Image (cartoon, rainbow, N blue to C red):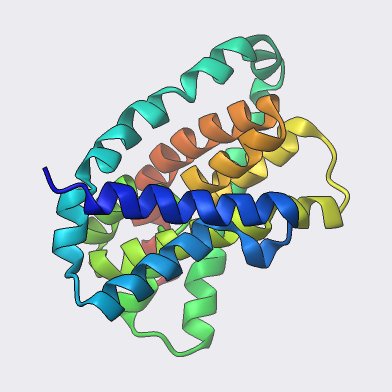
Length: 224
């Protein structure tokens, strides 16, 4: 089996993770730098994206159990999450709605076409749901996928630093903010900082995906 993609992905991410450990600066974020580096290597070597993805598909397969594993910290923190269930629900409704509105109006201010507006609206939910939602409402699924990934990378790179800068110390609030705004990549970052925040973030990511897919078609009718 061609293991080029597996080796390249693991080696590049390991290298940038080690660099990040020495100086925890947002511009050294290993996820962001790994994506840029791999794209650059593929371009230089002439290796097609399809060849790379085919040889790295086992990593894609491992994403599903990795997401399911978020249920472990969620179970361990179930008591606190139950205690804050009303606040979590309110945060998802408010944050999910604000994410849609902000994406929609930012694109509108910059003169985006209707298809671009519709593609941007679901950018804060996880890729698998966002692509389906984008297709359903008339957006451009490939553009939505790119925007979702960029949103996640941004949240992964500077989300925790922004929470610190605004002095948001409540662990549930920090998890909510990361999960609602930057889905899986944000959750992957915050769970390294604090298990409770990571558990809330994973829950918020999942529920916001469902909430956005339900409310978005109706909200867009009001906006258009």
